[in-house]
Length: 199
Image (cartoon, rainbow, N blue to C red; front, top):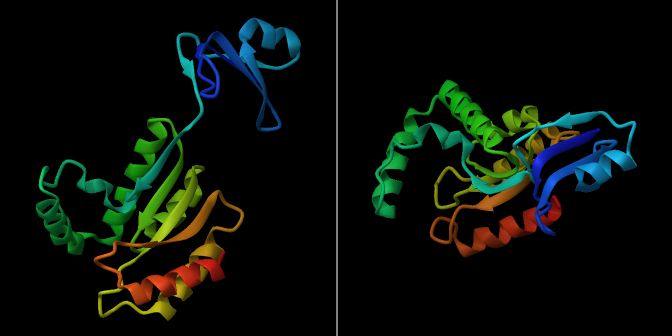
């Protein structure tokens, strides 16, 4: 298949006016000026996007899809006030709200041209939605170890469960210690060892 558009942005080289990309077996096999690509691959099906831009999919390296529903609903400016407002809203998150929030966040990513995402999840709820979305994702399960409810063994078992749910998908699982002020040094070492153990 050949994808053609007014502009092709390879990123690693100059922008090509009237450009095209030749795709073979789901991978980019050739690109350049449309005239050149169509003559080199005359049997390929052509899809012309007209006055458009073809560029590599975007990467959003830090999202919290489970919290998408709070977009525009938290105070701007001071980080401490913003965080306090966010923490105050967390208890209101039902399973239905988590699902709607995650789905809405994924839809926004897709509409904006994102093809790869790094998502930080405190519940693991976004993992199955990302697996269904077709996006390539690294879902980092968040660890906040200052909480009395944090248990490394439970965290480890949850990780193994999430890893088993994402086999044969485009989603990989990672670990995200929240911050240096919510994860003490001893726990950071344990989480790093766990990350190495689970590759």
